[in-house]
Image (cartoon, rainbow, N blue to C red; front, side, top):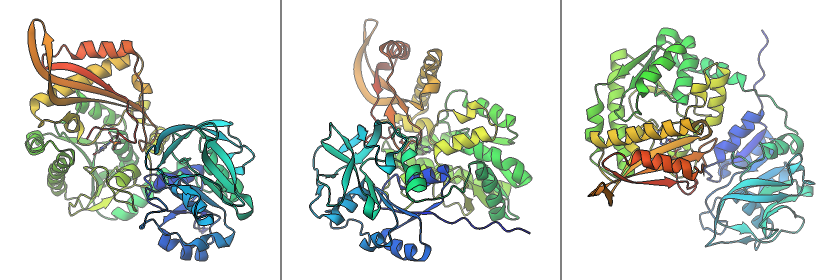
Length: 515
Ligand code: XMP
């Protein structure tokens, strides 16, 4: 029988601690190129043994002047393998070639979109427009170019150096992040680097992913029985739909009604999962346990941890009742990165479903993928647009949307109704599907208002609408004054709601959720 040749890893990515390192790998994968992420310490030996066709240095939060800055072996430049430095990677390449070239910026760090002018003679930028919007997230910047290098992109009317290259040494560097969706290059920069500069060959296609997910999961499960918690969101629903036909009776799908779900959600999820042949059991007897535990704190991290504790307890009970050996999770790469479970990047938020110690073997078939890929899979798999473009909702749900006061049944009801009203208005104006995520939260700080002839000392609602593709970065989706006015006048009809705020802050610095 013909054996499939193992795929050769073509690009090595050196992880210097960026939140976006995994996105570099997935973007390369999406483009058809296999790559590997390694720490700086392991990089040199790996290059010697595997001779990759290209090397990418990720970004990172350090400054090249920090005492504990990542130490990259200089010898990686001795092999004649093309190197692309991204953000910190660019600063390192510059610094290593000229020790006075990096400018340590204390104020005025650059986070967010920048308009960049590209020099199309650079092989890295072939096929791109002369100006593109790119995503920057850096403290230090390059103030002068080492000998042998030339500037290939700038911003702020030529004042800021955004990209450099040294063709003879095959060194390329960009200050912005070509891997994130906010950089409007449609992945051309990474594709140019891999295909044109490193001569990599495309050997991976998206349709292979479903096959791979099924085969790998079956293999790991063996004779065991798996449970999968379905939330109705894109990730878990897509995963359950992919696995249900492959695993049959060996897969038990259930949904825990936490009490933090949106209005009418359980009924809709039941319907949707039935359509894609998932046999879903609803577990709804533990809502009060969630409220009682989470109401013990108003601190964002403590609330997340309490949610996770109760979620874990219930999961355990359910698993026992099914005699399960494994649990299958729809956890994405983004969740793992932001929970600090991969590489060097810092913990931003505890996620309810990461590293739960349930005494079951965990299978995370999507842990390699980003949101844009899961949506793509949902479509490939024939799940309706409803699933594919459904707005995401965090596992802890409305519990994360009551800010500054202990959660209670009453507040959950207020925020659930407000969320539903906002959704109806956005749908009426045909905006809902253009927005990546809408967050309606209750601010528990009382402020004074007047209703009728009386003084009211009540709550505020904050409406946050954002657009993004990968949720690693987001930008505000600005609502028109008319839409804001309609939302405000609808929400303040509630006797306890006095004000409505609107929040269009990008991520970074603000995360998508408030907590
Ligand atoms: P942040 O707020 O971290 O959110 O920018 C990024 C995306 O993840 C969702 N999110 C969660 N999803 N469990 C989830 O399943 C969680 O604990 C959780 N926290 C945030 C968030 O709604 C956004 O879509």
